[in-house]
Length: 307
Ligand SMILES: Nc1ncnc2c1ncn2[C@@H]1O[C@H](COP(=O)(O)OP(=O)(O)OP(=O)(O)O)[C@@H](O)[C@H]1O
Image 1 (cartoon, rainbow, N blue to C red):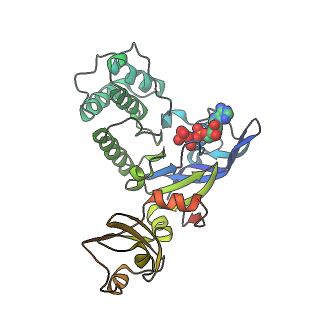
Image 2 (image 1 turned 135 degrees about the vertical axis):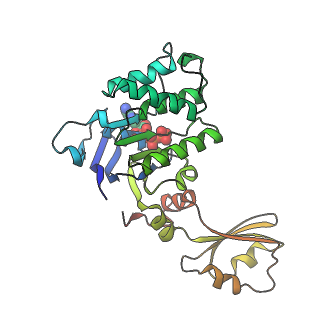
């Protein structure tokens, strides 16, 4: 796959605090690549280095299609973490202003803006001033402004923060459609469960360092053991004593039984003794969030998984 952006071993220190160490990943055409990590992990600092808002102390940012040339800003769309649009300007004018900044044809931009406003439930708001919009509406307008010029690379810093679930779904759908049309997308989030279903690859960062990098499916296969959620009257100790159980978390009649990496769910189910009381049972892989907690707490070794 064609990389549109290559981050090569960047490091950054503020005063005497090291906030990024040897961060390296690619973003390919047509994929959604997520930088995931908790607050303060270094996601925005990584993005600001890519955008040339600040410069890395070590390593470099490379746009392989533009070898040796300056950052191709007109080919990049950027939704910064700090939201903010000129408040006194109308919705349509602000979007067209962004299109003009990127040298995008205004007539085409206007058509695209109107179609996006309709898609995002903002039809009729073209002439409203930004200050008259709700926070979520303003965020939709800022998103439109970041994609109006059909960027090759789209960088979204925490695109879902502050959105209600319906708007989150709208954004998720739109981001997926853009990737399907070939846009390379890099998005950052600390809401792992939200991006779990939509990203193709991920880079998990913790305290400025990579802890996992790879395809979402490979990460899940390598790190995500199965867990069995069980409702029934069972003693925690008796569940803990079952074969291939690594740990049990129980609350009342509900228990989550975490299984060894090697376990085949069907084989494990057949091995359960008749003494286990089962009123409800489901088996699923643990979530990215749980993988992250385990790796960050040193319970599992992180690394690159067929990146
Ligand atoms: N300009 C700066 N000067 C000094 N320290 C900074 C600066 N910018 C960021 N940092 C520090 O770098 C670290 C990483 O911050 P960053 O904003 O990249 O995290 P993040 O992963 O985006 O977090 P969040 O999810 O909270 O937005 C933090 O410890 C932060 O305090």
